[in-house]
Length: 220
Image: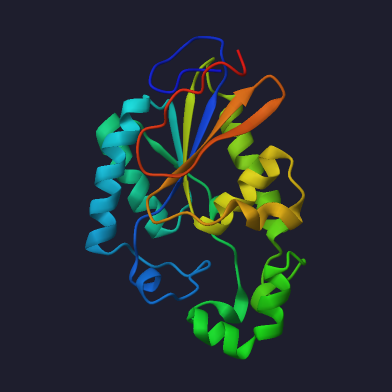
């Protein structure tokens, strides 16, 4: 297993999947989806703080959703590291049709059966939008192509959205779609870390807000 606070050549790549900072719709518990909502001042400060931590991992590349809340979060890491950000609409949040802009309570009240089916792990086009598997099919290849360009021991930072990150992790780990919800959500400006092990990608950290620690002893 590669060390996470320093580079060890030839011991696997790492992918850091970083959720954007706080928005006003996060505070109001509104489903954002592909609606282009900007960060609050608190969200910008969250991004600045997280960027200082993530810079210590010495990332080799940064890719981000082109929606403002993710792009502006990524820009804070770019400012610290000097790296350019590559934006890709494939990393956008799930399109959720008529759910977008509604609060959690409004969704449960108006679309309770659909919401319950989604929570049970059934394939649901929430609000007439995308299936979770469709989100994974557009986002995971973007991440994989960028990871393939990394040097041995390299680090890729992916700045995206909670739902997209969860489905991408599920796909990269080879989990069944019904189990993706078990990964849980990411807090604003927190991240998950995937490391390259002997049998593919494995989850090293989830919903973290501090620097990852090395995993020792079980996968050399």
